[in-house]
Amino acid sequence: MTRFILKRLAELPFVLLGVSLLTFLLVRLVPVEPAEVILRLSNLPATDEAVAEVRAELGMDEPLYVQYGLWLSRTITFDFGSSYVSKLPIADEIAAKFPATLQLALSALLLTVLIGVPLGILSSRFHTRWMNRVIAVFMYIGAAMPRFWLGFLLLYVFSLRLDWLPSQGKAGLAHLILPSLTLALPQIAVVARLLSSQMLEQMRETFVLFGRFRGLGEGFILLRHVLRNALAPIVTVLGLGIGNMLGGTVIVEQVFGWPGMGRYLMESILNRDYPVIQGYVWLMAVVYVTVNLVADGIQRLLDPRAEYGEGKT
Image 1: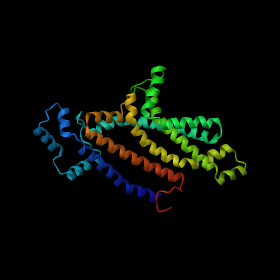
Image 2 (image 1 turned 135 degrees about the vertical axis):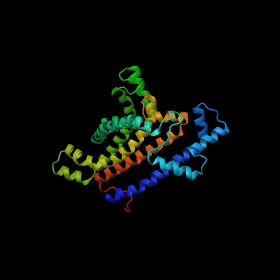
Image 3 (image 1 turned 135 degrees about the horizontal axis):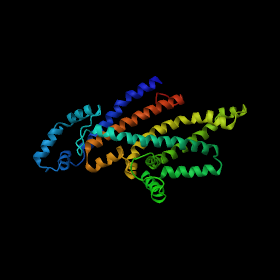
Image 4 (image 1 turned 45 degrees about the vertical axis):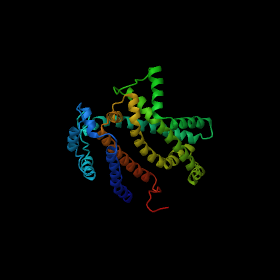
């Protein structure tokens, strides 16, 4: 376990370095001059002299490798500079908006576990009956439906037609239900389908037959032994799911007017606020690789047989 953690930690800087390079080049390769964007947002004429002055202030007249080194030295300390639009430190704006996105993602993760795991168990337990067919239809629809369409559908049914839930904002717990459900449903389908297939595979193992010979109940075997062995890959899927959910908040927050990082990113893209975009990409990369490192570690604890490319075949 220690060797695995040290190996993954050693890989982490190289992954983040690659992400930082791509993020840096993202702005340098766009056809629009950032200095002109700053002048436009400040309602100033973009003359050649003004553009040159802003470029000098930003250090964009330096060689590319010097610019990257200066930008990286600030970014690794989460100093993303100031927003072109608000002129405020980006780190402060992210700190104000990230909790809302985290609340949405964690709520969706909780729904994924509370709904996806029981559905997977039911699907495997009744895999030859009509209940499994109903669950299978739900899983296929949930996995295939785009989040933006699902969000509009839930919004129309439960907010506009039935008037059960609010449609926009973040005033209370009721405002959290529709966006978190929109974010969770595709992941619920993935978890339920994978858990069902894993449990059916485990049910064919020899230890299940021995348990039946010993007179153990089917429910005891299913929950005490089969489920535990089947959960190991689910942890990895949930880890990946957190990253997908954080990425999915970009669309979901727009649909439901949720004041988080996703909405902040969309506004920054429309305003060509490049430092904000860079800060968002970097932060999401750090969160994503960290969550997956933790998920892989938990999977290894649940199933020591899991392979992580350590020379085994």
